[in-house]
Structures are given as structure tokens and as C-alpha cells.
Length: 85
Image 1 (cartoon, rainbow, N blue to C red):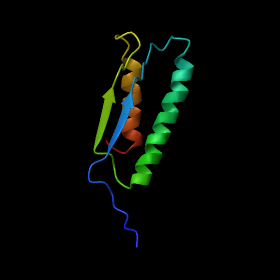
Image 2 (tube, rainbow, N blue to C red; image 1 turned 30 degrees about the vertical axis):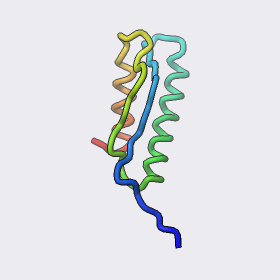
Image 3 (cartoon, rainbow, N blue to C red; image 1 turned 60 degrees about the vertical axis):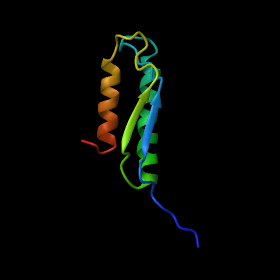
């Protein structure tokens, strides 16, 4: 008999997001990647069967160290999509 258990502590780790300004030509690509990251996070949380206990962000969040609006929007959407209001 194989016993399946739910981990007692789970986390979502994202690194080196490198968000840039909205007027950056690569922002369309960034939006596609952001959407896919959120979809995958929701899928992984569903497989886990419970909300993540922590979100760990490492590396560069913005490309220039000054453009955090896109990152803030992404993190708010991620939080809402995962049901962590």
C-alpha cells in the first residue's frame, strides 16, 4: 500500500523576473510569460491540494531596479489567482 501525504510546508519560488517598463518592446513577451507563470502556479497549487505556505522571490525583480509597477501588478494577480486575498 502506498500512502500519499500532503507536505506540511509548501512554497512557490520565483526568481529573476526582470520586469521592465510598460513601454518596453519586450513587455508583450513579459506579459505572455507572466500569464504562463500564473497558470502554472495555479496548476501546481491544485496538484498540491492546499494553498502555498510561502512565496519566495529571489534574484532581480526589475530590469533596471526602478520599474516595479509591472512586478506589483503581476504579484497582485498571482495572489488573487491563488486565492490568497
